[in-house]
Image 1 (tube, rainbow, N blue to C red):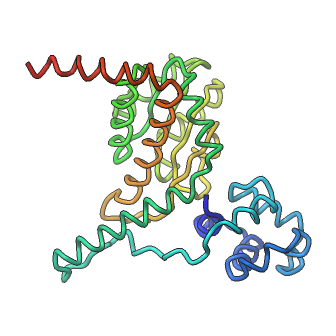
Image 2 (cartoon, rainbow, N blue to C red; image 1 turned 45 degrees about the horizontal axis):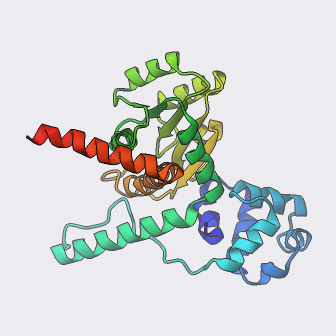
Image 3 (cartoon, rainbow, N blue to C red; image 1 turned 90 degrees about the vertical axis):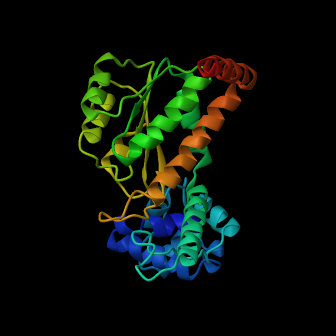
Length: 281
């Protein structure tokens, strides 16, 4: 988890006070490593309490935790391309390939830098201990949900998914506290999925969210919030970066679940492959 990246990614949700703190840290990254919260508060004309709240808002336990991370991170991350329109009508194919490569590499790198390992482990434990895993996601997110559904089913996990939002809503009727849900929504504000998240909270059913890093209702209500970079705007040519970054997260979830019971899951994967091979005969 790269602290400098997280500071930039939360930018749109900052209050005026938080903007002052973020700006100072980004401009004086090395200096603040020797500061206390009190000193940084004085430097930014805020307060020690504001510094601590800021640190927690972007995913750290406190200012000391943030400083430790910044000491190990790099502040000179390459800024993104305009990910909403990565090409123009005059680009030749070589330029298009180059832009696509850099966009994908930048998205993957930033996604890994934003990962909170502790939260990822919590999410993996929820999936491993769930009686049934219910997946929620529509539109571009349905591709991601279908992918992790197939992966988990092949290692013997009980997973339920349907890409129709109305059917997804009916899932909540039969879900119990022993189940776990995974909601995939880049915006975190998708109509219907927000309503589902509220129902899950009311029924005390744990759920994992995969959303952009900005504040949103789905991540706010979730048991475990996993974040992807906020790289796409409302008007876009397609869910490009969000799809790539979400696949990074769901693949890590799958790897973690697999590792928890490695030998059994390996056997399940072999059995699944053998069963599927019958269809080819």
